[in-house]
Image (cartoon, rainbow, N blue to C red; front, side):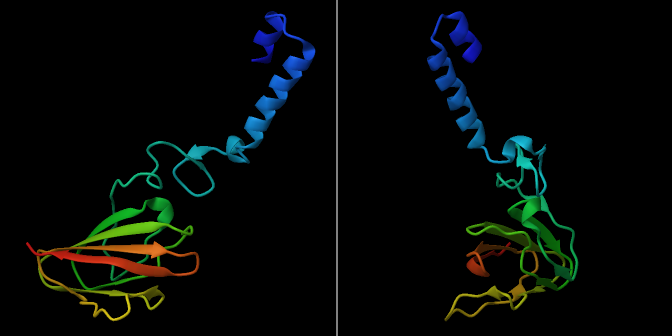
Amino acid sequence: MAISAISNGESSSSVRTKINSSFTQLNALGDASTKNVGTTAGTVAAGNDPRLTRARTALTFASSITPNCDDGLSRSVTLTGDCVIGAPTNPVDGYIIRLKFLASGADRELTFNSSIKLPTGITYEATVVAGSTRIIELEYNGTSWMMIKNLEFVA
């Protein structure tokens, strides 16, 4: 931009203003311009980053699962046994994570770590009926996770 201004015969004052404007725009990026592009913590997000999209990524079943927000905010798992969900790690205030569970083979108990706050006055049904799908959304308020959606779709 400054080079084209010089070749267009603009004054040095005008060129200085354009250069300063360019530096101001670069400074607005913070340290993002010096980080690597990637899909993990400490990197600048690319367009296909699961932190930006609602693309659902699969979790491997275990009796205890703790989702990592850096791996995506929409996760799915096939329940082949009972499962305890831990508070998702690496959250940012305002994150909403969607968890989709499919009960395979039999009814499954799906419980949550005590750090996840359940809605007041609503009884949480821990049993996910065999063949059905449960979708749960949790929202992070800067200090804790709160369940904001709990839907079950029976097959």
